[in-house]
Image (cartoon, rainbow, N blue to C red; front, side, top):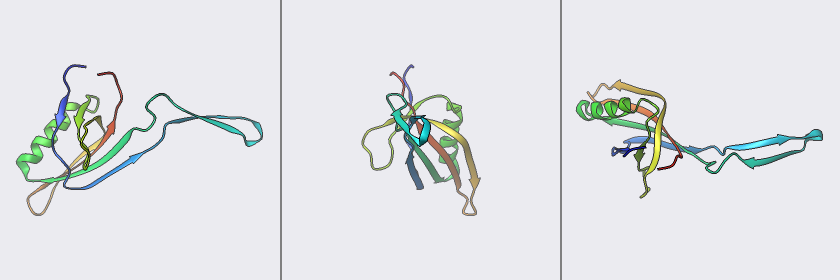
Length: 116
């Protein structure tokens, strides 16, 4: 891939992460089974993020996410981390106006592994 975009915004609140190991299981008779990692990168990070911003900045965030179209990879540095990870958006990109005149954007980033 060519130069990847960089997502520079950090969530205001509601950032949560999870990791689901990617494992293959071979089941044998009598309840026996054997597990093995499914590939080299078996622990992708999944981040659920919430941004609460004024409309102009919320529009910038929303436009960036829409431009990636759910398949373009981009760099993002998770909270309390110093190194960026390569991610893509997965699921819905939700946007809602608040009573205070701000816009809340909810999105999920999933770490991807591919050659640079």
